[in-house]
Length: 263
Length: 167
Image (cartoon, rainbow over all chains, first blue to last red; front, side):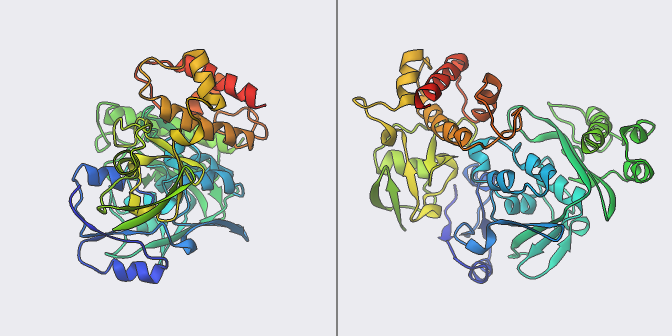
């Protein structure tokens, strides 16, 4: 690791102040950032740990909305997000148990890894990303691989999910890392039908609008059957699978996710 | 900088660089070398310890993040004279070859047996209310702990044995 200073504020206001320093970096659970620091792929001047801020932790459900503090671990979401079962199930399949005890929803959403699970849940549910200064709709928040609407020094404080009538997530997992080779999150609720795909596109998580249109009138796996899979030309291609293979998986997993959501 | 940790019930104040991992603090500053450094990147699980009772990869914890926290290492759950049920079972069932991953396996299994006794399901659980300790369930719940010698069947037998003892 390159050398850095360390701050561990106990309030969001103090954290925002600490992040005002040049090249400061927020640290949540550290399950991605610490390996990145060890590989010398990041060199912050000061690391601002958010782990001592009690206000950032906890899960609460009220009036059809599930609100999760940004510093809440995947293990806690898996255990306590029973009001939104598809989301709890997704959280329980991230990484391994030790990683789930440290990694946080805010860290995952802020990082926006193109193969992470939570971005699919947020976009696929039409969630709202709450920061220290504003609220951002998921549709406006995810702006490409590792790119988000967050400004320098802005901290996610919570993620609010409208609880849909039906939802499911299916991922074809990379068996070692448990990242999604492709993951599809579908939901049907007051905001209509959403189909969010992670792990596939070089632009990060995206909505498969053709499938959403087909499912809007007929929320069944059969409605997806007649669609052509999205183009694999701009999809992630690596040793685990080609772009065309991932494109194929998008359609297959969308059908399975719809079937699962229908129970 | 200075950080206060309670390790195996004993309070320690350590002076360290902000970059120090909890793993390096345990091994190099406190000389508790039972916790192993395998990959140092959170992939192998050899460095698993209990942090405030929950299993974590100590290589992916910066010591500076844990002022006031409680850590339990393999040295804290038993001694050569008084082995824990899991330690006894690993010896009995020969749940290892080279032994390097074993402290991590045992710490992870210690937390896992508690989690399952508290009724926490995993995504492979058939019964979400009362998960059972099947081979599939153990394989999933221990998926963060790799054994390059591939002693997995005997590791599972040891965990199953310890589970029966504790019941």
